[in-house]
Length: 330
Image (cartoon, rainbow, N blue to C red; front, side, top):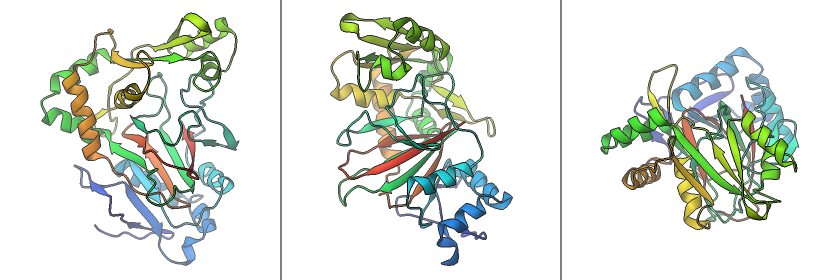
């Protein structure tokens, strides 16, 4: 691949990289252009300049994901300094967010406290089950998983998934998904992780209903003070506003992974008119995501910037002490 050098970074590669249909590497990889620029201060200073911001913006638009490696970021505070220099405001996650996250400092959160590390998280676009979703997700590896323990954050490009589904004969399914959208449902516990109280940040049922309505969803009350979250129809396919290309954008695959190990009725996804997805299309989706995924081992200090509108992410099972932090941007 061609190597282009800036004042602080050079395009590099990793063995797991793939090539997209537009000939862009996926993900793009930026490493220090010299030993002098490997200091985190050089990176932070570069991101205060138009040239540094432009480099990241262009690489993200071309590839959909950018891995920054070798810049010696060490802590959540370092990561927060980097995020503060990226374009865009913090995406508010406090009400309606499904993942259980704790604010570490500034714009930095834990990635997902509600799902144990030994369980996988399937492919999804962040907050695809609500009308508004973050434009970018920024991950930071504070502590990688032990060697041979998995723990990669997987990425797959939504344009590739859409193209492969068309090639495999599922164009009618994609047309139906584009027209009807997708609804998501999830059974919510009474308290603790994964509860309606944590999802809507209240222990008052009426307030929870009102907050659900504000974020484009509703709540059905069940026995034992449990509830079911049901989204309004959400996009299952999006169109890239810059290229006009159609992109697979949803949490359908992630729901299938959760359903495989959860009690019946815990999770579901279906067309916006409540009709079921064809099983052969679901099988094809999971197969294509598995074939097209990029899974690279985290290194301490890595930062991965993901264009949420175009790229899905997932998590491999792992073991402690893996610590990956996250920041969501509008």
